[in-house]
Image 1 (spheres, rainbow, N blue to C red):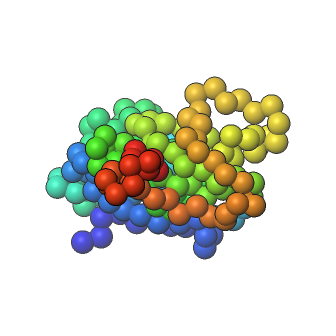
Image 2 (image 1 turned 45 degrees about the vertical axis):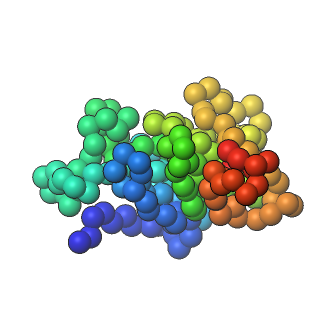
Length: 182
């Protein structure tokens, strides 16, 4: 059964993961639609699904859909916003995972050219793309308004590695010094 489709205006930044969360809902990572610099400003536009992490209920169906939008999603009642959106302002959330102890949703978000970032994704959070790239202003290049943006938990420069994939919070016992680290 096809649950959801989304046209991609370009052939890159398509996201990369779907997974069920501890709440039983299906989470879907979608990139900003591609090109460079999010020329269409999709990530900040709550009227489309690009540059977002979505949360849908596959055990029910709303009229005209093969899924339901959970009533507690953050933008369900906002005019002009898509109710499927859980979080937004992401460039290309390639992989994500849920912390097996806390249930927190962690995502690696690929940077434009300067910084790669890791985020703890919160309900309704705006992760800043294309206003910010990681912790730096992107558009505009300086003096951007960071009010209300969720800054990354970690960043690293492209000189240290390109295109963060994402990972897991370590909850094993073999390496105690890594316990609780992403």
